[in-house]
Length: 117
Image (cartoon, rainbow, N blue to C red; front, side, top):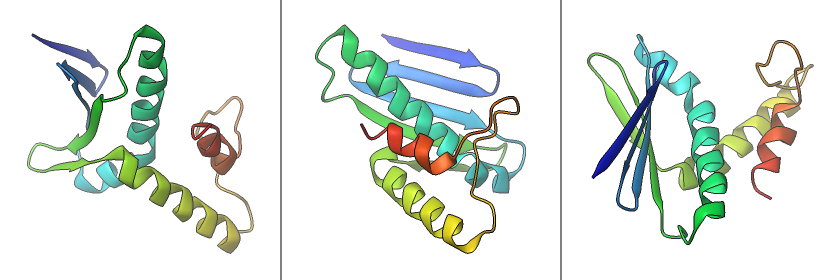
């Protein structure tokens, strides 16, 4: 049995011990811009599922796609690289990278590191 949830342009597919979190974007370059967002969804999903049983072997993959292109990545590999990128960017910027929440913007690096704990 496969469970598929669609919320806005996000798709969550769950089958056995495998989960795919997908995000549709109208342009290919926007897929890359959404990488951190989809990775955070994957980390959040893992964290929430831990409360419901032994899902330590849950395989999570992330995908971004357009009408003509698709990219799949492993959040376990890309997440640490995302943190490295944000660290380097913050060193080169006058202002640190922030979350995109308009009402309560927070330091992006701090928020990403919270996901590691």
